[in-house]
Length: 167
Image 1 (tube, rainbow, N blue to C red):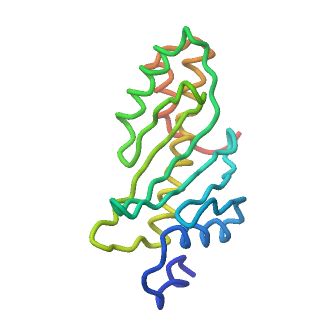
Image 2: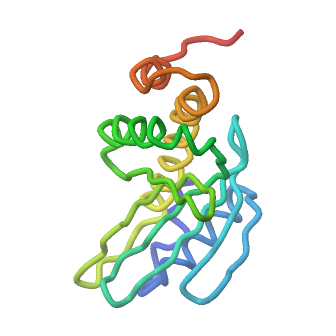
């Protein structure tokens, strides 16, 4: 059954209600922080990602933020920012930034639903999965630049390489 089939008969569903349904469907730990915000933890291969989705009725945007802790040495921040620029050139649906004060790597995405549009469960699920897949894909590159002394170009070769099979 498609995720949307549960909502076909209902109109004016709040986007965060849909996110809550998706979190329950995937059995993710979540907390409905407020009527317009939900936080959840999604387990990846490299780490657990903190994902927050918030609805802003002012500009009719569902904002997604996926974070993970990262504490690069201060002398490697320039290298990390260079890697971020290269990574963001590859990301079409969202973008990464590093929040120095919080020591968090952040992937951000906004789904604009102007004119009273309604997001489908599939759209939201795809956005969440894209955030996790992007974090998983580029996490090793960020680590290589900050801890292994590789250049951004070298780290990107790992990130863009497609893995086939299993070891």
